[in-house]
Image (cartoon, rainbow, N blue to C red; front, side, top):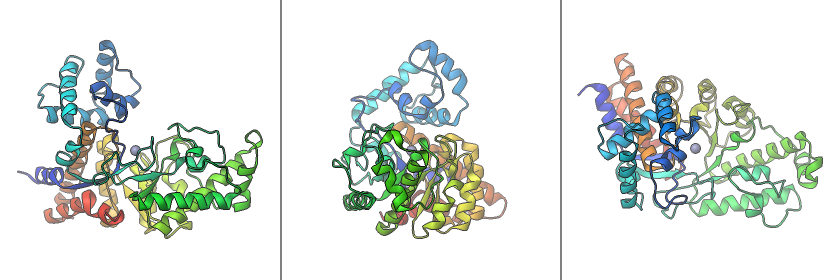
Length: 396
Ligand SMILES: [Zn+2]
């Protein structure tokens, strides 16, 4: 067995803490077939439909080089022992295997035994902080998106969430708003949530600033039609800063989606002011601000409270992930890096495990070849990224 193979196998079979996941269990589908996996996975983001045979032929012809597809297909073939490639002709065969496996696994057994997860920091955007009925495996993050829009009691966000779910009664002022927000987070923390999660980059930029409480309160007191962009920005920046404070008070890492999203103003450097203003808050920067990975490298290099999380990146681009992992090891302490699958189903999650194992094997064997690292150290780095760092960071 060569070095690369040895590291790959070591990483693949390692017990893991998955720091970011949207596993959907059977919340949305009673039985999961291949179409449901595609529809909930990143394949749905490839801008091609896959409902009919003709559409699938077009789809496979054009997405078969993409990292999203490569890892999902590899996972499906390994899990179901199918030698043929996944394409329009073999669609039904794969679909039958997926359905049969789903009928047998109603208790997340494949996440435990196949993926090797001891814990999963679950992000249920459809029910903030939910653990899918398995609090041992799923140690949730509590999503905070709607609280940034809580000045508008009629606003329903893209995840169908509305502030009235958390604040049934209107608040008197900004102080009461923050007090109620703090109380909810304390309660969720006690109930088992281990982190806060912000995915607002899908709705607005990350360029939050130090806003004044009085300025923030204007949004609460003004009717929607008369609100200015400045009023909204003041409110959202003020609440984001208070969330950073609460995360520090509770010692809950603050996971933040960076990079893609709405793309405008969502690269990680937009968070620089917030990071500097909150040295006691642990900022976990998701997705390495892909494709602006240098943003995360520079922030993590300069600030001890920044934790790069490579979740999603091996699935987005296996080559960018490999290159960036080595740049991170060059510049950031090894106890800062974590990994999560960022997927919805067991198949896709196993694909993410295959992807990160491949990335670790490629990047670390390269370092060994250059004389920068021993095999023993490479394994130690796998221990840290796949398990130890997350265990410490999220106090699991
Ligand atoms: Zn995610």
